[in-house]
Image 1 (tube, rainbow, N blue to C red):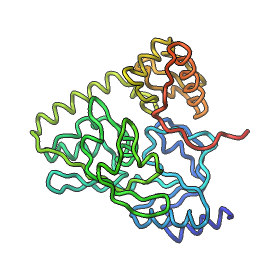
Image 2 (tube, rainbow, N blue to C red):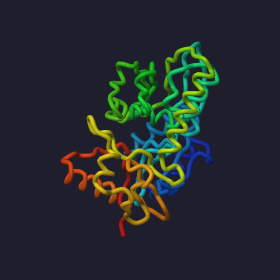
Image 3 (spheres, helix red, strand yellow):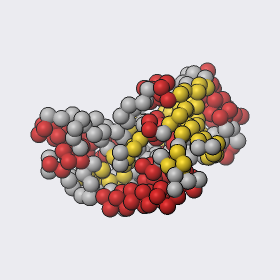
Image 4 (tube, rainbow, N blue to C red):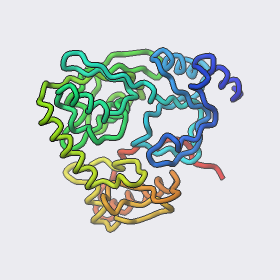
Length: 306
């Protein structure tokens, strides 16, 4: 199918300000890297999301979901087909002790909303830079807390365009994993079940965690966040540091000198630099400690063809 026809078809599904062609994805990633998307759409309703997915399926067009690009590396060749960016779906509402939030809202804003309403349980998320959709997708966590501790249910849309409501057990949440990631579902909204708390105590905890994050993580540079999952009984950053890799650099991407679990873009780094450095770190740690580091960051897209 010709690109112009797909573009025009998408304009019939969404307003023209919600559809872009040959869009640079580095504008939407925390690493400031990544190639172009053939088509980039910004739906603002669940119906628009569903319509785009059904259109893609009917026309055998690949589609990819993108949140705010915080824990992802998009390769330099970009992404073929349609990229759905959900960052316009940001409504947050309150029902008793439950927060209902759309997938494009950030988990940080959600934790602040909980604080404002004197609800405890989301303090751990006050420094996680991703969207609610991404946080649920990977069962994100920090400082002893994680999504599985507070999630009640999630509204998703399947790859076939069917909308399902999954309860906590149906999510099959594991360490940095869920049935949503395994089945490729798209998160539309999540409901968090929280507890009443005292504003000052909640804020004090959030301030403490924010200070820890700012003092230990290299927030002054573009990065993809925590690169590797924690091996059982170990810390990825410690293994990398003990392998002598802190400060190791390929191109303009470096293993952070502040926290070895992070890789930062110190100049004009590319996605290829990130991928090469990740592989180098994995091989070195495997050689020294016989531990296979599994990536937490998601790597998608195509290599750049020279």
